[in-house]
Amino acid sequence: MDQLNIEGTDSTPKIHLDKKSGKFEIAGRSFPEESRSFYAPLFDWLEEYAQNPNEETFFEFKLEYFNSSSSLIILEILNLLDDIYKKDKKVTISWNHLDIDEDMMEAGEEYSELVSLPFEYKALKENEF
Image (tube, rainbow, N blue to C red):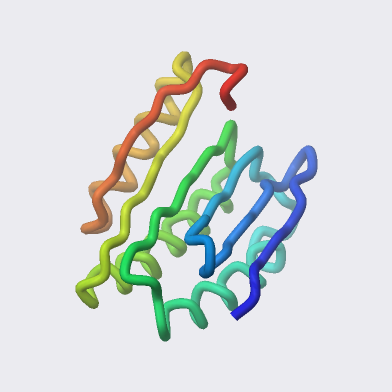
């Protein structure tokens, strides 16, 4: 399984998924015109990864903003990761947000209530984002 690297733009996040290094990250802003088609390669990659996941998966969300269609996509990603977690694999979600962005922190908390995955929350300064 190869890496998946998608460069971010003003309206789409950077996506980096790498089974070998164990680095899984979505970062930036997410309001693509066609969310489903933009995220299709990520779902293809994750579904293949779920067939033979690492013993530990650390998935980092570092989003400044996302729209409602991206919100549904994030939940689908978390549900796929939850399926891996339920197969006795260690999966941790790192939910990063700007320290002044309470809405993004609350979004992470709401997602955590919808899945059984453990969440870690990190409040970052703007220069760390």
